[in-house]
Amino acid sequence: MIIIPAIDIKDGQCVRLYQGEMDQETVYFPDPLDAAKHWVDEGAERLHVVDLNGAVEGRSVHKREIAAICKSVAVPVQLGGGLRSIDALEEALGLGVARAIVGTAAYENPDFLRQACAKFPGRIIVGIDARDGRIAVKGWKETTSMDVVELAVRCETDGASRIIYTDIGRDGTRHGVNVEETRRVARAVKIPVIASGGVATLEDIRRLKGIEQDGVEGVIVGRALYTGAFTLRDARNAARN
Image 1 (cartoon, rainbow, N blue to C red):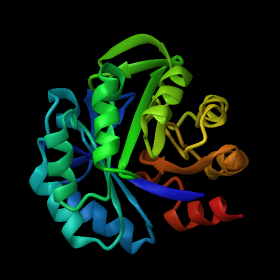
Image 2 (image 1 turned 90 degrees about the vertical axis):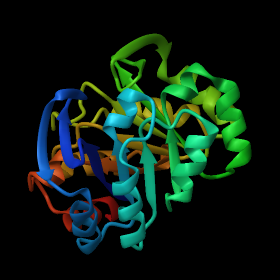
Image 3 (image 1 turned 90 degrees about the horizontal axis):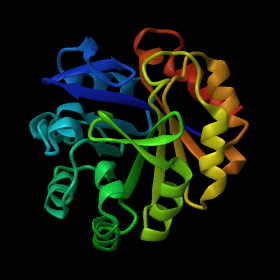
Image 4 (image 1 turned 180 degrees about the vertical axis):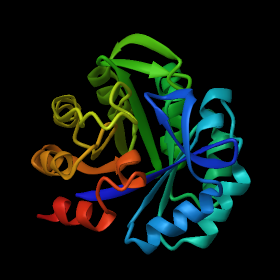
């Protein structure tokens, strides 16, 4: 199971939000590139980058910062935030991004997702963000009535290469990962699932490792790494053992 450090970009800085609230942020690196280099130096095998302003505005905002990260690190970068058109996906992948994450658009426009997966096979991830088991969209500002498993199954059918499942209620809180909901999503599909939201201790990593056989490929970790709750090396060891 792979540990993927998160780099969330807001107003040009690397931040962490509390439960996805844009006005509850903590700045950890004034320059996101410094964050990327730091985690790669610590042993990161992949980076998870989110354009937070882009997620809210529905368009890419931090192209310069994203291009700089992709150019400067030798590990794959997966990018999300505001990628809601074929042109936006093509532009993001052209910046050097290995995989692009579609969120709101996957829920609102299945035809778009099918077209994107056909045009960029193996390079489209669907980010499924949930609050109390229901899909949240538009930068987590709106919660729908759709169950996460229903969307996961639909996205797999439409050609998604993998799914990132985020429990918004846990994200940035360090209150513990939602293992049961992650397992429920992973068991419903055959494509890999990446867990996200709430990782607080190495025990959370070990618990996720316990459902790796259900299809959990990795976990995105943010605040716990930034605050030094554990090191990336320790997390990687927990994920291997």
